[in-house]
Amino acid sequence: MVKKMANAFSSIKQGLSEAIDFAEGKPTKAVVHSFGPLDVKKIRDQVGMSQNEFASAFGISVSTLRHWERGDRSPQGPALVLLNVVAKEPALVLRALAS
Image (cartoon, rainbow, N blue to C red):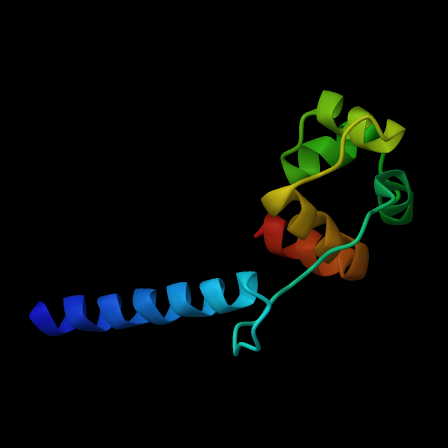
């Protein structure tokens, strides 16, 4: 138990150090993923789904999807990541969600 706590502490400390270095613009080993703006309607059209089907398949409210498509709002956090994956590998995501 003590060893696990020490390992967890070391991992958290390393991550925090890397995050601070990154924030200060210093070189770091941390992997940073950045996503640009998405055309959510284009992604939905490529998948070939209606708004209702797309929202239901990916756990998004239809209202939120409409806001994204109109450009009133932009996807953030996990939704942004999911949409980027759907844009690149829609069949894979749909297959994974169907299992």
